[in-house]
Picture 1: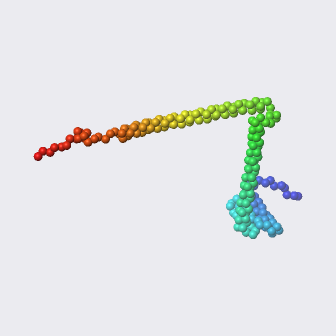
Picture 2: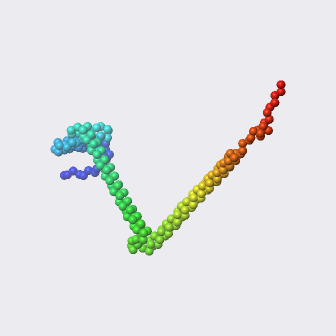
Picture 3: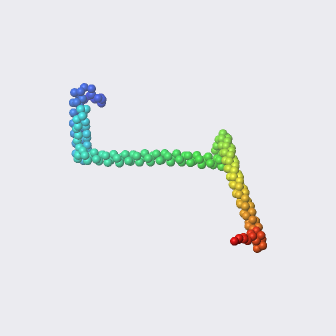
Length: 205
């Protein structure tokens, strides 16, 4: 009579659970030892019981196996990260290529090319977009012209003010020059005139 199939679930009975743990633990450690000997494999098995007791088997030793595991695990993680990053950029490039293709088609439609494949509604939408674009272009053009005119007017006012100041300076210099010319052509006073205005002083003794 064969053994019945055991359902894999937690054993509620404490004694039965401890007995099963002991048997299967020994079987697991035995199989690990056999595998390491038969296949020349490096094996590390760590088991903690429900009471916290440690059981382990290692070949050649647990320290070297743990160190090797960490090294391989880190390399595997880096590989996974590299694969994820490569996949991410592949998706990004695919999206950019689709966007570029769509932009090229839209540009061709705006230039009046390749219109045979689009419907009447799409043509109407394209016409409305072109009209809105032209309106925006005209508004921007008028704004630039207005700004240039205001800048020229401001510059003209500044030049006019500078001219007025230069004219004032020129008039002032012209007046000074006229006064200097008048002073240079005045006749020098003669001796008699000086005597009349400055009679000799008389001393009395």
